Image 1 (cartoon, rainbow, N blue to C red):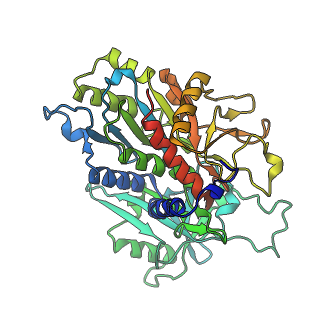
Image 2: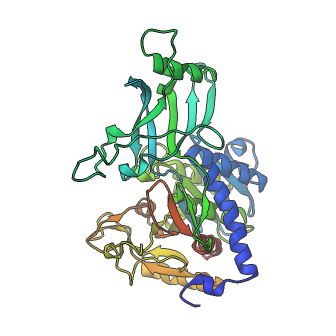
Image 3: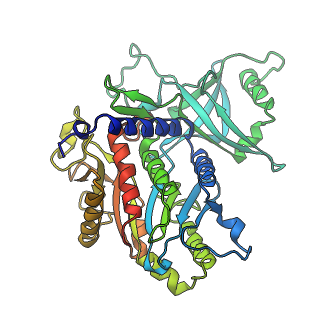
Length: 453
């Protein structure tokens, strides 16, 4: 295998990459929130014969090898499972990704007036460089729940809709030493500039609220709303050679989509396979929809019960005997900022899926350190399938670091390693990946699903 995968991909192989990535671009263009990702996954699962675990509980039906099921948690987690031939307590092959991405969230009381504008107040989510979100087109995706129990899914700012923006101070007046020093309270969206002349106070705010009333949404409804501000527009090919993709939320939806596609195509595995898509990774995997919750564990208990194999001991054995790919992206070496990387050991574009034996910060603080016995077995699996992969770290040792859901999965005593797509511009509004790395990641997950647990 030559250094750059493109040198080995031609003809039919390149067409496979392009066809796969075309569908991937459609996914990240339309699925910009956790709820949208879950709706997409459920739709695809049901098209491929997966049944809702909730519908099976109490039905008297028993799961058998080859059966396919899924479970949803609060519309922001989804878990897909294909039952294997071996008893579940012998272990599972799990691919777990997160579907939340850095963004701006609307506050519970977002609307106010200032200088002839209706402004919309935000609270940033996850690790962002705040200045990157200024002076560019933005959209709003989310859901509003009313007191009467009805809900309204909203998307503003896509297609031919008017977009939103956060203003920036012109360079003629910005004399700060660091012009990139933007505060969280400065991330205020321009909501509108036409007044409602029928009222005396809050004329601009009232005009915007009147527009929302057309959808039966009141100002008070934003207390029970979840509105995410994301970059407006579709993912696109990047580079004159169209070798890359630029789009929002590829951390970690590049891994979410590839893992989902792999499990949808898995049939009659020897060991039970699981695709797990979770929320809240960008803020520590906390809360009822983060990996720290009991959703995964509780769902596995229900599935084992439906298979007639449940006991507390059998569940513990199943989790301990499992293998997991914590499918999360990693930092690709940036040719402009090479001083932040160890170019010999860090991930590169067009060299395949990246495996980080450990993450964490500096002295491996907060890391899951994968066992070499597991890695050796994984290497054989990937080599037998002809998958292109690279063993990497993430930046210079003292430069920084990062975390994933790996250490949480490892609490069960299972084997875990981080494996995903190398990314440029990570956590920026527009991230960049290599098409061939996305495709090789999909191939790696598919091969892993067939590995002996």
